[in-house]
Length: 164
Image 1 (cartoon, rainbow, N blue to C red):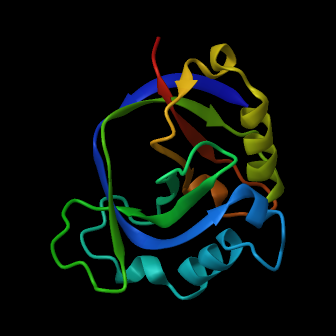
Image 2 (spheres, helix red, strand yellow):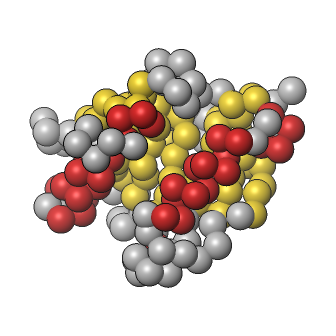
């Protein structure tokens, strides 16, 4: 995994959500991330989003944290949009304010192991290794052309941080 510190501007996203926790995600009968991803990609949800900024660039966002990585959070799967005009009623809207991130890029690997391993490593890091204390505002993964092959995927994980 390679790390850089990066500040991103405000982003507007449209997509679908599920409320979950990391504990629930470890139990296949309670997990919601896999089924949400399956619905998004298998049903062509992204093609129903209007005003897509970068079609095919999917954001998997963890937001509305109850506490930290041990509590409940909202999992949001969608795309960045240029405007919230014409949002279909089955979708949620999410605005991520300008924030500083510790950006991690994976080595090529098989999905979902590559993303699970990345998060497990991130959870073990202290704030100095991360580049700052976690903000727990919005963290996300980006799935784009580099992650099309499930056996050889590369993705970026952005962890929101508070600078010292």
